[in-house]
Image (cartoon, rainbow, N blue to C red):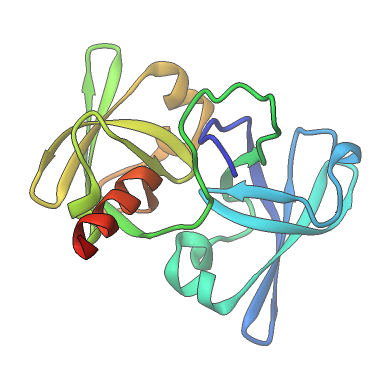
Length: 196
């Protein structure tokens, strides 16, 4: 489990194809001595398992399924990646409860400066847009955010300067694909209403 609070922007160090799967090495500012093999780390919102590590880097393997359903299939050497280590009992929950399971791909509609912040509008695919509510939570590329407004399949976010600079969201432009994870509570509430 994660909270959607990014603590490092890593970089893709190498990419290697293995049959249908792909192996990525990720550079990080974290002390990798404290990362166990088998640890779960959120990569742009995708929970992946550490399979190898060295000073300043670790490796993960990504299945063909994940490559086809997320933005990870487009990663190239040098690409920046939002990283978050798994939450531990007793950690501060600064964002919201995030599973690291991407529900679908959104598409950036617009990015507009708004005061000292930036407004990002994103189109969510059907049926995910039904689970997104104003003032609710959503995870975009691994970042826990509050939804400001919803109009049909498009939802708007206000990105404060800190988040703009401390994550990869500051590099987004119209047309970019983003990993979306809807709020877990919204998912279960909608499922409960469908079966009630």
